[in-house]
Length: 379
Image (cartoon, rainbow, N blue to C red):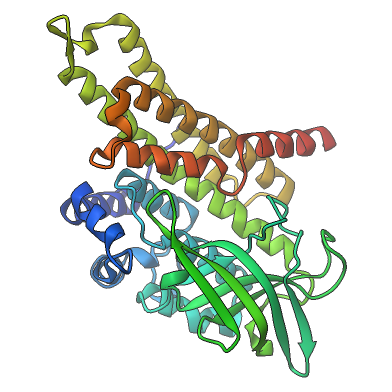
């Protein structure tokens, strides 16, 4: 693929890489995730106010850098390299993407708050029975005067323990799995009737089970049209999917680099195991998976503006390849390191955990292969 980043995009990457290199080493990250809050809020503030990174994909009229999906991919890849736990994905990529798509007063009010680092938004879309079907919803928003009453349960809501707002999918009409009748709401996390059960995730993040117990929300919490929100939800999930693909390339790169370094240090029979041909071949195979994942991610990102079916096919092709690559690179990294690779003290095991979670986030390899096949054959 013939692709060159702009000067501004290179600046974003270099600036963020330097900052994360100075503030986000593995030992520091371990202190973050083992603290009571699970994060250091100063990092988020610095990303917003010192570096301006939270404005990367937003228009200059909002105080952003005038970028888009490619800028999101750059930021996500750099966060992947340090297995960052910052809520950039749900806040900037997903909620920011929804607000940009809807526009109007809601975007004017919330996007500057995101850019300033004042708003953290968690995406509450997954339900226990839903698997990867975005329309399979039991959470309902019943019309009540000029507003709605929200009821239901959302699972594994990443960043919810830190959130100021929730972006919630709910059914305002129709039956379970119908494409019609799905709506999207942006609500304050402190509304009466929201019950949260917080917990750490295996990859070092924090998430919540969220229960909505007859939560009264105002009519202006609705993003887009009532009952017609599924295309918008599919769009922002596709944008999120290529963003985690970008994160995966950063994770995979560090898994490869860490394993290569280990083979140069570890000795058997008096020589570094990097001298063994079979391991040389393995390092090359891992490197190729990283580069293919990066190319597929760029391809998927560049096609986000295409009509829905073309966009979805490109995103599924990228995610299927990246999921398979993350599995290959992660497993070979652990196999090469042996038992030490899964210890808490070694970074490689933590990269492996994040790679494993990314494999199924927003759809597994099998799911996206099936979606790609259905779209292509339908054409």
